[in-house]
Image 1: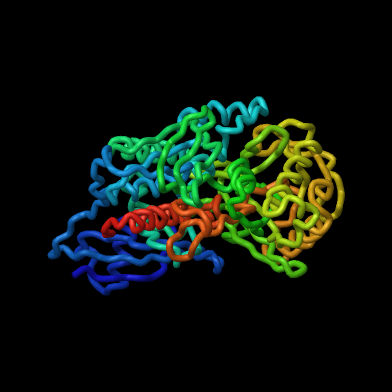
Image 2 (image 1 turned 180 degrees about the horizontal axis):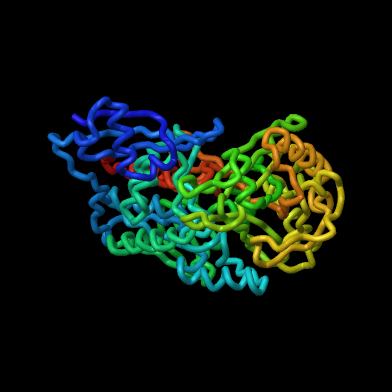
Length: 523
């Protein structure tokens, strides 16, 4: 039996196999020569003290024990070419993992994606970054892999009760992700590596007899006697199916509008909205690690901060160490920001969404839109940002201290946001109550993170697509829509997930419920 260990070591020891073996041997009170292999199972960084430590948990295999390196393998997916078809709308993590689960259960997924394949999206991302041109079907939010493909690839979720997180991580490893994601406390793939993994998932779906159709936008649902019968595409084609998993993502406004128009029940949902703040990574390292130089054994420092301001939560969201800010509009005439990091997190800046929780009462000026009130609130801010910044994809920007003091910044240095910025007083972008909360909140952030409140930090507006402004209600047990049989609202767009892992888990859950409704024996 391997010997278990759990202790703290220096970052240098954690990064060096020989040094780590010495530390493990010392902990176990044996000779390093007795150790055949050290296997780390969990790893996290502890920066609460002046000297940063690495928390490790793992097993030490001794020289007289059998040791075989474990290898994660994909499930034995059957060929489903001639099996019952299930429509999956959207090829984000919810849709792709739903499709994989359907295949595992012996059902044929037909995945309909409004955007382009993962490689084809790149031309449209260049167009929005360089030329300010927004393709409504292919952008940072729409296309193969969804918003996550070109948005960092964070695999961390606080929602441990949602489902089997390790299963999702193992599937990612099986499709090419580094095994480190099974070990790190805050796993991350990186925007540069995700596209190939997403493509390999698509190739597996097709190889097993499933279908993945790109540039295929759903424009209508066929519903008879409150039962799903299929979907109609933008080109007029009809695809029949009695089971539809709706996994469109949180920015598919046309789908929300379609559901409302057809009197299919949806609800306004609170979400969070604010800005994306960019600091020099060296400054965040200095704050978090209490040192002037991070060194080669520590990763670029992340941060997480939460404050209560006037009865509302204001917090960091999707923090990207060593990352960049990206333009994530999905329609012309709006500006939206988000952030991502490459796998090495080696850019010179750190950025994070800093957002304030909204309440349904905040949407009262838009109550004539019914359940779409939150969406219209969101849209109005994005359109105002576009107008104030010059009606291109430039983002309204302001230095952080200047914002807290209601002062227009005299100049904005070049940031990682490629389309560029326009100096704007952020109070013009947001409703007064929101600006007031953020001004006070940044001052509070500065008290708990000495050095965070600085004019070296540049705020970009808005960070508005944190989660869906709509919930599509579903039965707690069957996961079917409360009124439409055979319709399975799924993932972030339906209001049941928040990130890659939780969306993937929800996709699997919906696929399992589809199979259960068809009396298929579940594993």
